[in-house]
Length: 243
Picture (spheres, helix red, strand yellow):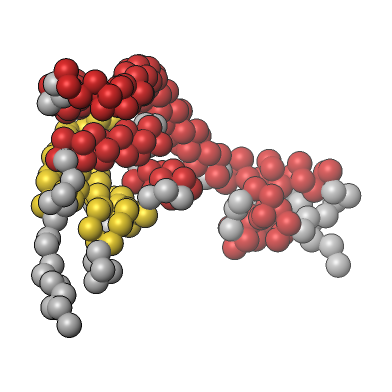
């Protein structure tokens, strides 16, 4: 019986990093990517890891895979390149996956558009330059890929513009939320005089009675404080205890 060659040929792993900016939250990014069900997502305290194992070898180990690691200021792409796969075509393939992920998290993470598109353009140029006139048929096979790349580039430019608008809106909404929280806190922290007036109005509109737990829940005032104010009002002769 002939010997079977079981030598394992490890794929090369390439890495590229792009600058970016977290304009939303890691939780929002994780939710958007997980909902798509294309990528696997793992979150740590300060980063989001997105990955996919496309194929495995005979020992069930990852052969074709890519890993995207998002931090607050960068996205790093690690991807495998098996020995029998074109490095140039593999690069385009994983960049397409990265574009898909970026489109899903465009409201939470903004990549450096200039550097990213320059890299994509270079990757496409490398593939085109490697094709001679004798590879016309092969070129036609990838013509649709180039068209798709241009469309994705156009969409990403539109997304870049939208991201600026969304970032401004997010800042404005955050500021408005802070103001509303401040107003709510002031409303919840009633002065003793305001609370007395509120209790009097409650008693007048509830047949000269007051249910302390119900009043406390309605105005988010602790019951002990309501009871304390009631005691002061009774002592001052503002209201009378019955029964």
